[in-house]
Length: 245
Ligand code: NAI
Image (cartoon, rainbow, N blue to C red):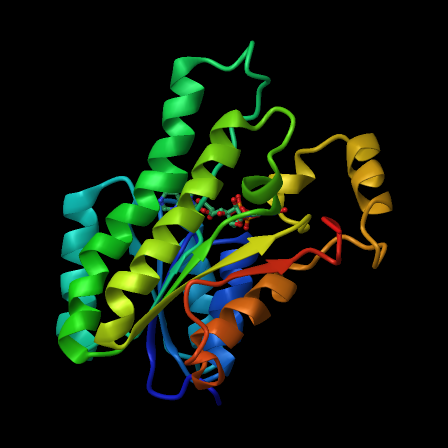
């Protein structure tokens, strides 16, 4: 029970990696609040409540600042604190530079970069007030190395690393750590959309010769949210089976 009495907001936790994180965090004793724009978030929360855990869903888009402010206020009013923010929500709109529209660029920057800024900007003051917080943001192997067809996504995921390192410096003195996780190739709806051939080629480049599971990333979030990681700040934790070596 490494997160006993902790209140955690996880964005994009209706499904995929975020859903796995909601389960892991609940099992470790946290009260989990799911922020997602998919109404499936309610079923995810309900199934965790059915197992006796404390989990609620709030319909929040990370691009909607008034919505984030209202949701954060209600979490704080109900639980009296917000200990952990996992900025996990993300989208892809993959195209090569020559084919990428300005709208493709803007949508991905809005969700994957500005969405992370929005949630952290709103939640951080609650953490400052309580002199404690853990901010964990989901970058990507492709934010570190770039990727064919992902100008928008790689830019946003690289931007997250810059923000996290800035927050580590600004918020560290206030009892708050900020770290990023850079997942490699993880089996979720996001990667299920890839053609089989592309997926098989990618797995062949991973030294552990398997695709990652959402739990692999959830466990990295757990470490960074736990007391064991209290001296880890401004770090980018790669969780990719050694793919980038
Ligand atoms: P997913 O597509 O299965 O889940 C993403 C969730 O984010 C969905 O529930 C979706 O509704 C939610 N979401 C999207 N836009 C939102 C918004 N504006 N506000 C609130 N919620 C929103 O994706 P997956 O694979 O679970 O990805 C989670 C994170 O991990 C993302 O940030 C993604 O970029 C990152 N990642 C995933 C990798 C993979 O191989 N699956 C690899 C590297 C990074």
